[in-house]
Length: 308
Image 1 (tube, rainbow, N blue to C red):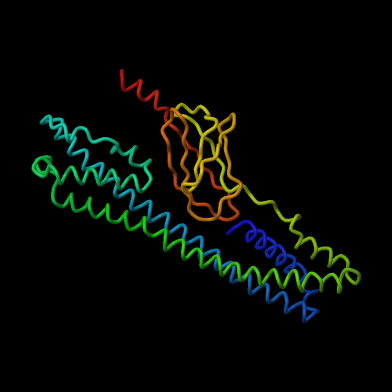
Image 2 (cartoon, one colour):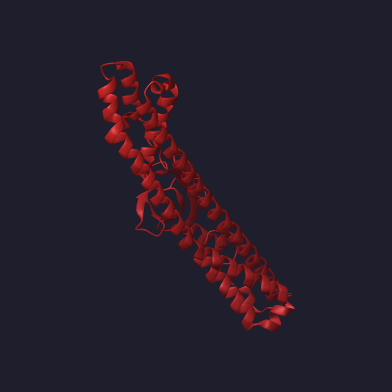
C-alpha cells in the first residue's frame, strides 16, 4: 500500500475504535448506524485484501529464497568435486572456476547466480570425460540443470506477482475511496451538524478519532547499519532500491533508514568504492519497521591478504 492508503486505513481503524467505545450513543441513531455499518463492511474487505497482499509477498520471498539456496548447493557441491579432481591431476580448467564459493554465490542477485551456474554447466558439457572422472554423475548434472530451471521460473514469477498485487491495489483503492466518500461527504458533516452542540463530548471524541494529524505517525519502513568486516561504520554508501538510481546512505555511525518503502519485497544493493557490493532481498510489511544490518567487505584488504 502507498502512504495515502495507509493513512486512510489508520483513520478507519481509529474511527472504528471510537465506535466501539460509543456503541450506545450510535445505536440511538438509525442513520448513524447505517453509515457505521457500511464502514465496518469496508474494513472487513480492506483487512482481507491487506492480508492477501502480505501472504503473496511472503510466499514469493520464501519460494525465491528456497530455490536459490538449492541452486547454490548444487553449484558449490559440483565445483568442490571439480576443484578436488583438478588439483589432484593438475587440470587447470577445474581449478580456476571463479566466483562460485558459497559466500560469493549467496551474495549474488538471482540473475548473476544463474550466469555463474550456467558457466559451471558449460564447463561440464565441454569436459565430459574429466567431469566423469571427477565423479560428477549424470544425476548430478540433471539436478544442476533442474535447479537452474527452477530459479529461472521463479525469476519469471514477479511479473505475475506484480499483476496480482496491482489488482489488489486497485480493489483497495476502490474500497478506500468508498470509505473516504462516506467519511468526508456524509459522516463528518452529519456528526458536526447533529452533535457538536447537542453532545459536544461525543462529537469531540469523534473529531479526534478521524483527525489525520492526531493519528500515530507512520513508522520508518526500514532501519539498519552499514559496517565493514571489522564492525567499523561505513559512511556515504550508495544504495539502490530495485535497480533505481542509487541514493547516499550511512551517517557517522553507519546508521541508515528509509521512511518510504511500499509493502512487498524489495532488493537493495549497497556499494562503495573499495568495498564489495552487496545485494539483499527484504520484505517490507505495512506498519512495521524492518531491520537490515549490512556488512561490506573491503576489497583492498582481501587483495592484500591474498597477495601474502
